[in-house]
Image 1 (cartoon, rainbow, N blue to C red):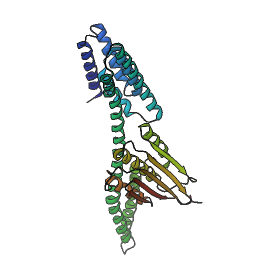
Image 2 (cartoon, helix red, strand yellow):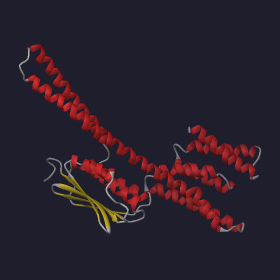
Image 3 (cartoon, helix red, strand yellow):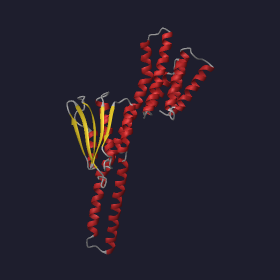
Image 4 (tube, rainbow, N blue to C red):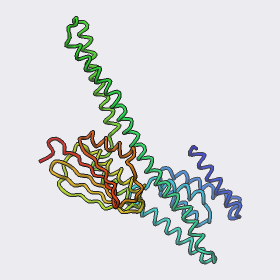
Length: 329
């Protein structure tokens, strides 16, 4: 569905509801539809402002139901910091308070009003945030899968070509053929180097420096996480793997033990970084799936070690990542 179709659908739905309810007609209805379209137009670039505009229109008109759902969903997709959470939550609570005040004056039961607010505002925001997180995780996993497949298949074939060309290069061949073989060996080595660069690009992502933001976004989404750092930071060979360990641990905690407190710790040793993500066991983690298997492979590829402890009272991921050459004092 294109953006224009979404605008038309939301404007038509809300304008029809207002017209059927008898709250607007003629020029008033046209003005209402125009303002709704303007709020929709602002939602792609200013989702929080559009959501605030939708809440304001809902208070003033008693309608704008479709606009509330759409802008709330878009605002949830763009939540990334505590400030975003505070602004969104404050706007929803203000809207709830004003709606309850109007309901009290009209002698309306508060329970249906509360249910309507949750349905039109809270659920769309939560749905938008959840789906955005899932898309980010899916994209990261797909990049890793493609990088792994390219490295395993093309990398192996190019290595064989390089070895065979090198063997021919040192063999007894006429000068013309030896020159051609030397060019073939050089091309194979260049192709292998380019493949390595492509794989590195696909695998590239935030490293240890991005874990602070990852934890902050998890807290902004409503997760309870204790974040601890100890030791003197040193450069590690598996910086991106460290980020992925924390990302996978927080994702598993949100999926299998929602609402449970999570503990993330980064412990720098003189020659390694220990990354730990733990949460109370829910009994639903089960056998490690493709996500943890791929993560273990990535950690091993960086020279590290990953252990999964699925115990009766606690689920814990522990990764050891060695310090980069020359970084350990």
